[in-house]
Image: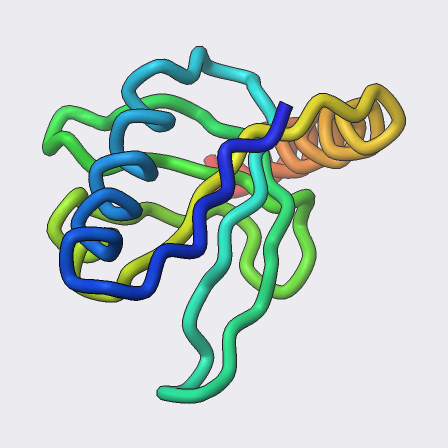
Length: 117
């Protein structure tokens, strides 16, 4: 089920902002989502990622499968200011691929930690 709105008036823009935040508040850790990240003022890129929950500072944490971004965090204010659209994704194939990449990254991080001691 996708929660993707493209409203153009001022009230519509505010609805979009609230909907993206509302979707994040309703999501559980490990759920797959699509995030429309701004690259420039006119260009945006869709990133499929796993929602990792909130950190102690209230920022939303995501993992994109070790692609161009890796793990990234976004505060609520940034999502609203940049009008970032977020939608849930229910694709078993994409979910398995991202979980596999996440586990591989966790194993690499553990080995790096062990090697640095």
